[in-house]
Image (cartoon, rainbow, N blue to C red; front, side, top):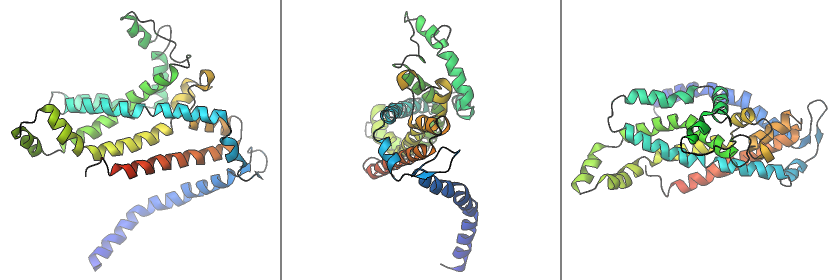
Length: 291
């Protein structure tokens, strides 16, 4: 490297230095300590007793772990549904309609709102007696269910709320991706006789796959960490533990039962699952992501 390039490199490292220091002090240390704690039996009040891998063995014999893992897997269904709805709305907004900036603001507003306030709002919406959801269903002669109290409906209720909250961010990303597609490609497709469906399938979809890949990866990671919505809406995990996610179960073990070692082991198992899922996605991305 010449002197100018070396100088630019040093300046670049100075810019990322604060984040590196923050990671070393506030992230790497707690991570290593949690690894140690996961090998112990510790309730905060007493000294930790080293138990080896017994916490990890107990996890895979724990029916509540499998229940919360299944619930978390169901919550992942909100990712493709949210992506599909966001893409449809983004395409509609990309048609040059009037008031696009206002629509963007309206859709994005939930993303910058407090998740606690949003969850409380949706508790009212899902209220069995006077909630807006059942009131709306009543117009079609449908007797609305007990969304929060019924184990069959609590997961769909949380998924709907999650889609509503996150759809604004996804729309903005898709709208930016759609606007970056060269118009010359659409014009060339039209000359070849392509209709709207053909242009969408062979031009739009391939060129927005990088942003779709990003949204899929981040959406799955966020869904695997769902907690606040459950903790506020159903603090006990719901009927038959039907709403509890892995993070909620982890929180219960740590701060309700004070089983810190077991909770730390759960955190590392969850971290491994997230790493494995993300790794598989990156490996498969070459088959469908077009740069």
